[in-house]
Length: 272
Image (cartoon, rainbow, N blue to C red):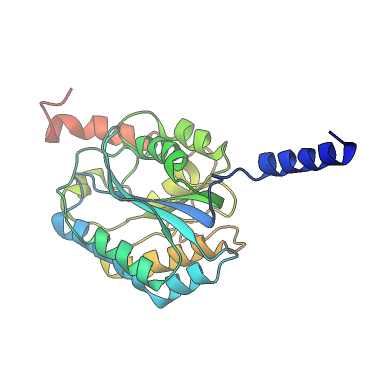
């Protein structure tokens, strides 16, 4: 075999190794939508959440953000969560590149409304989301967990180790703290849930949190959040902090577990 032929075969081999035949397609962002369906949520609130996400995904603003990305494609999954091992996939990982695909994804969100699950394990949701990225089938320029919730972590492992595990892999965590005061959630209501999310939940490059104070704000908040996450705008933080006098040092990220211990004898005497 001549030197020229050997050289050409080496080039072919290098190209084959550099560009495998079954390389994962690229997207602008892999977006894990983690939606709280814990027992503290009322049936009406659960429906508002589903429809809010669906309408936001159908909006012109979100579709423009998808189509205007560097690649023009995102991968997204919609997962409801509650206790440590209570996660259910409503819509699996799906690539969206246009309006029709966004509408189809939104329709799947609205297909059924399940009942709420017990407890609130933000740590469980974060660990589940971290593992789920390995099954997305794509390679995102960014990976983002978008987590909503109406209370602090009160089940499973503490939230800080789970958050840190996610951040170590370069995944950004954004928050949608639901600060409404309705239903069974009043017993576990945390007045400064926005601060809890700020100090104990969110993190990573460009991480932000958008609190919802009233359910009438929900759809607009989701739409704004999705646009920011999909577009990947260079933002530092977005806060609406209710208790300006509190300092970030020494925030109690175990407050949810303490509230659960205080209330479980009154509301769940059979739970050990």
